[in-house]
Image 1 (cartoon, helix red, strand yellow):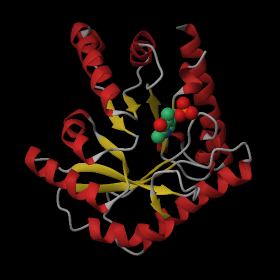
Image 2 (cartoon, protein in one colour):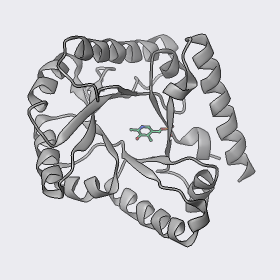
Image 3 (cartoon, rainbow, N blue to C red):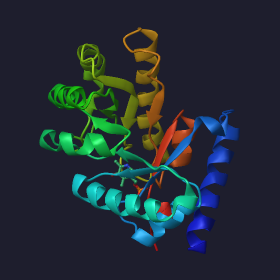
Length: 237
Ligand SMILES: *Cc1c(COP(=O)(O)O)cnc(C)c1O
């Protein structure tokens, strides 16, 4: 467990250094701890260390860990913590109704049909669902996400859905060790982010850029990420 604390410290140091390099304030950057491959004890340790934003990419696992952590928090009222779960993985339309009540934000909105489904489910719950538009900046055909060239038009269409709030963009960089290629995915997302804001298509809620994972989060910070999604750098042995 000491190992987890040490790793989180190193990650926070790296984020701080990247912020210095990019002349950014570290308070602009939130770490979402991705628990999909973590042991339950390790997730509890992360919560004890004060991390409140956790991410899962599969609905089945989200439901399981969510329940386990809810139970843990109820048994440990002294922690006095509320955990915010982020749905970061591909979301099937028939799972939307299960996911919304458990999560604070869906990072993986990538089609109009999914947006409509989220909108309908959110209306039934009487909430406005916070979503990020997932963009396929690496242009790898097997990846999820809207094609870069379709984002503006889709965002415009989704703005008419009253029970979703578009809070920003999410992307995954190309899977490669070539930092130049990774960086170009993030700059593409940042450009698109500024373009959507500049054209007045989105509201003032549009402020998050979710990008950067274990292998590339420092590059993401340099390119303007406001949310990092990091798992294996914290949990993997
Ligand atoms: C697993 C996952 C992450 C975290 O990846 P690591 O390499 O373990 O840090 C981030 N985003 C998404 C969408 C994921 O599925």
